[in-house]
Image 1 (tube, one colour):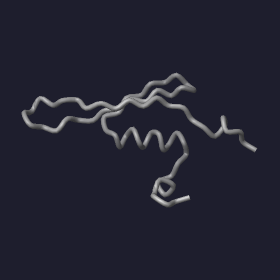
Image 2 (image 1 turned 135 degrees about the horizontal axis):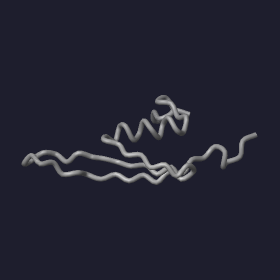
Image 3 (image 1 turned 60 degrees about the vertical axis):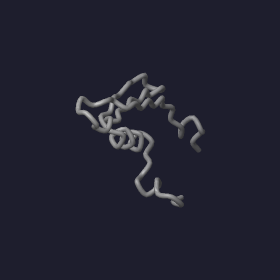
Length: 70
């Protein structure tokens, strides 16, 4: 049987809004993830990319993320 440590992941996630040069343009959201187990730091150009990375690393599926899914 797996222990909790074998089924858990630890990440530090940072997100920030980068202003754009165009007057009135919506800021672009960026992110980074520090994987505590490996020490790796990865940067992402969109929040969707960041989310996809966390989903892949954890083994979560899109269905598991739906409200009410078990």
